[in-house]
Each structure stands twice: as structure tokens, then as C-alpha cells.
Image (cartoon, rainbow, N blue to C red; front, side, top):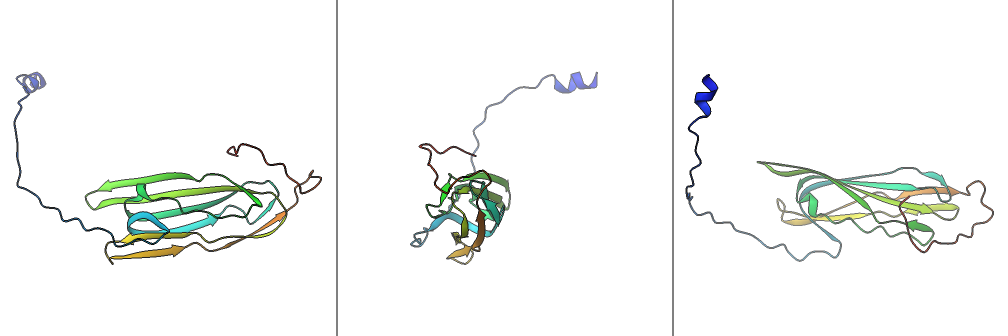
Length: 171
């Protein structure tokens, strides 16, 4: 058949190939601020809180999304500083990255999970995201808003004293 003739006589040939030399100029980053995330590129930041009214020991998620072009996978999550009134777990991250001729683009989602232990009105602090933008040649900073969280006593709780577990586990 036509296809048998097409695929017969195929052989692998080893060959050494060369190209013209390419020179790459790499500039170092200027002195970084203390809270630099490691991101280099053009990014946007957005955030959302899963709930604003909860009962004690309910899980609350603060979702942070960094999107744009640059080294998204190397971005370190900003530190969430909460009071001791909260049980705070390590953040979970998820990268959604696409590489193309134009560079690397996509998003990184960071989810902070925490549980309020006592009733009251709390302010979830603003998170600072700092990255270097090579287009402007400067570090840029964007912040999330502060969120207000109202915590009421959960049903079935006798008092507000909580015995903390020795080991944190994901909720």
C-alpha cells in the first residue's frame, strides 16, 4: 500500500549541529525590601474571605490570587499574622501556569485556613505582596483589604476555654 512505501527505508542519522553564539545580559535586582515575595514580572493581586460571620471553631478561608506574567511558581506566600485567638494552618498553594513564546503567565492561588477560638469581632490584617517589575525597574507593592470577622459562640459550647491540640491537622 501507499503507507508501507512511505514508512520503509526510514533511518536514524546522528548529526552534530551548531548555531551562532547568543549573548544574554543578565541584570541583578536592586536591594530588595524585607517582605519581597521573590516574584519578578507584572502581577495583579486579588483576595476574598470565605465568610464574614462564623461561630467559634468554624473554618474560615482567606483566598489570595496572584495573576500575571513572570516567575509565578517562585512566588512565596506572604505571611499572615493572626492573633493567638486563632488556630492558623500552613497555606495551601496551587499554580496554574502556561508557557508560550511571550513568556510564562498564569496565576498562583494561596489559601490560608484558620479557626477562631473565641467569640468577638476581629480584623483580619491586610497582606502585603511585593514583587519586582522589570518594565518599570522598581519594586511594586499591592495590599489586600482588611476584613472584618464576627465570631459568635457555637452551639453546645459550655465556655470559651479551649484546650489546644498538640498537633495541628488540616480541617
